[in-house]
Length: 182
Image (cartoon, rainbow, N blue to C red; front, side, top):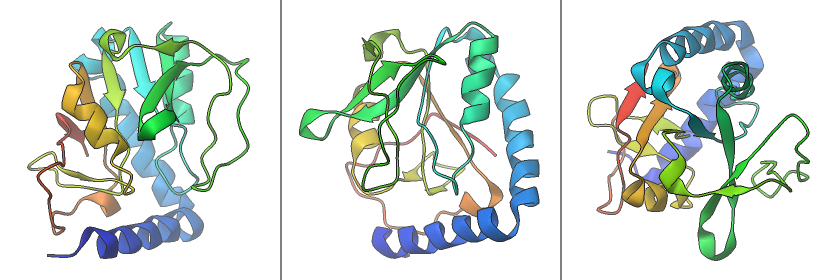
């Protein structure tokens, strides 16, 4: 078993290698995952979808956001709020975005903060996923563990082949994702 720290280093390197040196493979994998997501019962029944704005080496969430808008779904993007919590801010094509933060993420500067209670489907990011147990290895801030502990909607993660593994140490506070699409 690897420590979370070591696994995070490995996974970031692996995902950057995929994005930088095998972008066509990444696009093919993403297309397969999008098809599975967009045909899932969770997606079809959701009116409000929460997602992150992806980093270049992550699964591209811009496609998900665009599809949600085409289907007249409300889209909320995660933003770090006070006290280490996440807000989910409704976005539109006119949304103003921040400059990249220390993690490289851009966040919405305007838009209504939506309550967790109205979010039907949450797409949960991660560096690695245990497809059998639903456990995920996040980026180390614990943001999604805190959210998933109280979230009552449907949580889903999209897992590239390079993200499927189950060899890191799980802590008591780690929260699984309900569904992993791979």
